Image 1 (spheres, rainbow, N blue to C red):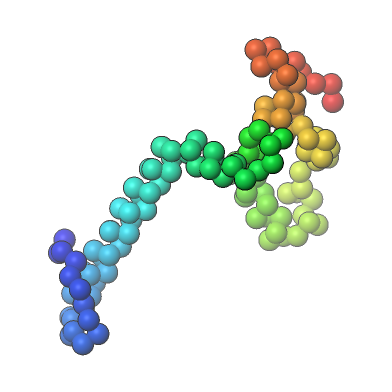
Image 2: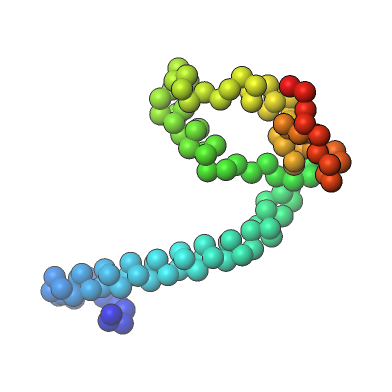
Length: 123
């Protein structure tokens, strides 16, 4: 792979030279994104701590979403709320409205007030 050199608007490059420069720039971008992604995974606890800094004092932790929840939201946006197939179950809606979001809030399908011995909830 050729070393990246500055190219001005007046330079005349052949098709192969253009493609070589494009390939070089794409590889450099992928390496930079890969390194940034690795750093974010390595320091994810610090990033979440920084993001939760401006929250009110009664919020202990951020409520993060999984990949499936984002996908479900995108499908609902695409197909509208009339798509019953993508709607969350009524029980899950009631739990979220009641603030039962799992371990982070201390309640969910299980009661986590005693983290050593979670107890199943009566739903």
